[in-house]
Length: 316
Ligand code: NAP
Ligand code: GLV
Image 1 (cartoon, rainbow, N blue to C red):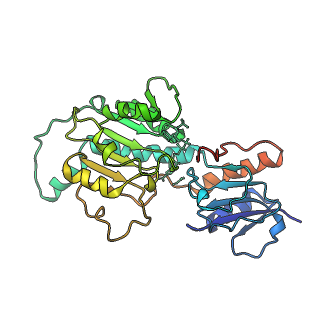
Image 2 (image 1 turned 180 degrees about the vertical axis):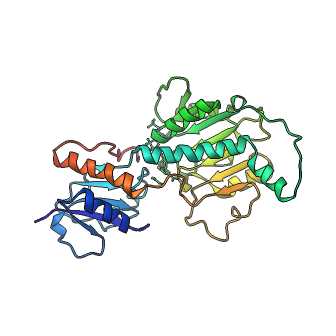
Image 3 (image 1 turned 90 degrees about the vertical axis):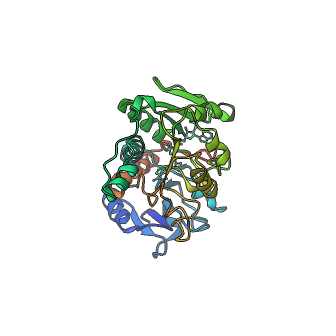
């Protein structure tokens, strides 16, 4: 019986993935949830928000792949099979995220929002001090694959960058903090906070008023700003709004939300100092990411362990 590679997507369009895997894995039948396939033939599954329970009882399943870097969607499924499970780590996805954070960090530094508003009103006004990038301190919560690449490129531009992890680490040229005890030190030296954490029980709701009030108040910027491209569950949106209105926060750039799509009723949509993007800071491009996953399948078929396996106990 030919082995099946199953695409289990509860969100997004599976067709480009089907096409790509048909080319890359010709020795497998490529099936989507809902197609007619032999359950015993399923050897691998790639998922993105699959319906909970839909991967249970595949007796020949050898491995599961998350279509994205984040794996919190897998933990929604109490019946997730206990097989090696890997996430996306790929230069294409990393570069896209770095583009996003550089774009928005520079936009905050160079006050793009203010000058756009002035242009709309035909106002020529340059009354503000323009800080240099080197005078602006960036703090990155989550110095994993994405955080590290962003930190390196933001440093090259000249920003003064530091980061925060769960476990102690060292990266040349970047000041790193770790653990709950050291988080206040990162916040106290941060003018632009960038969040690239995974969503876990420990990180849920971490971007709240208490945290935002710990950001630097002594900087060259009027008030600190926030960029969250990690997960919406990391943030308390009501508290972000009150921090914006109360002067604790100058600007918020949000790619991810507590509820997605962001409900039309959310006051975030029309807030004058909020930028909203529809959870596409870094999309998984089917052409690039299917190549990476097909290579993982080949590793597994050769009897080699998968790369980038998630650690169930850490939750990421
Ligand atoms: P990663 O390599 O696993 O890095 C995660 C980082 O977060 C690590 O530095 C880890 O610390 C840190 N961390 C985890 N739990 C922590 C805690 N409780 N306290 C302090 N630090 C903690 O993940 P990645 O590839 O960089 O991706 C990060 C996240 O970005 C994903 O999980 C996903 O949610 C999000 N994402 C969003 C998009 C988008 O389009 N918006 C796209 C891709 C990814 P250690 O180094 O000590 O383990
Ligand atoms: C996107 O959100 C990802 O986790 O890759």
